[in-house]
Length: 508
Image (cartoon, rainbow, N blue to C red):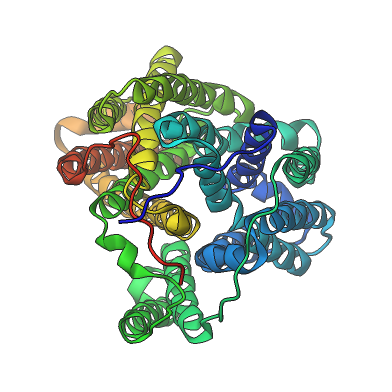
């Protein structure tokens, strides 16, 4: 068995770390920062509700399709060149988005932004893994995770503040200084790496792109189109299944497939992907639920909502600063991840008992606890995922890892939003059925409505509000159950042994 060095030396590692963290933060921010600006964009761009939703959908689908290509592009272009192109392209696309004057142009530029941004997260992760020795991978993943985890959390409050204080254009233009600093830092600190000639597997890419693209459209548009009651959703589901099935057959028969599914034969990598899928569901579903809960049901303004959610990011930062040091001292990654899952489940348990007059202190406290839990899970899992893989496979593996997290986030948001809509209707019917003008309720109902149509409308609005609140709490309960159910997956992970390099597989 051949061994090799577990890392590569660079002249200015500190500058490189800051630069790739900025690139990661920039991409992670854009997954959520535009959400709160959509109503303002809709008016300016004269778009319908269905058209404005494509501002988010186009970015998600483009990024999902392009992410698996990261490994191949890095092998033929070199990681340094690809990272520079990705940062420059993403920054330029952000400028174009900020200057867009029509909905067609905005969707096209968001598509471009997604294509360039797809490589940023996996390239940043694999670069940090390569420049740190194996015993410091926990610290490296803690640094990288700050951008990946904190970005989506800070996106909504930052987007709300920029939209209220300036305009929605700055939601995109804020990427210009971040991108410029990241570009300069990478250009001056990351050395040129080796490249190799490799034939592009167009057939495999087409099959995988079809499956991923159709799946993302299915998940993103399902709730709007009434799921399988819509021909569009039926077609997208069929195409997603066909694309993934054809790629699996192609992978079995091809000597040099586009994406090596054989990486999942590594137990640590497989279990880590299952974990990151669940983490994607919990993190992004929670971030999708809390803003409408606070704004629509509790009548908080956008800026106040952002301030209440911001401490979640503080909890994540604290956890990541601690967990990197604990991993470096030999604390078992499985133990840290287990504690993180329990903290996350506890925070969701607290959230499923929220009422419509829940104190701000409790909202902040549960956010901090959940941030701590997610941080304690994310770093150990990101470290263990690559612990038994060779260096040559890291970029391709990082692409798969990022794709799994993104699909988890799409699945989570899709599930909770569908359940929220349907449970609100069911709860409304159940509550309304108990409000009858007969029997013991007659006097109370008359007092509430004052016997007028406006009184009945106000009562119906309150019933809808309470029904929606119950639906939100049901979603929090579901995510708590998912989190607890994922804890046994820790038994699949093997402990990380520092100083032992995995065997090197031949480049292919």
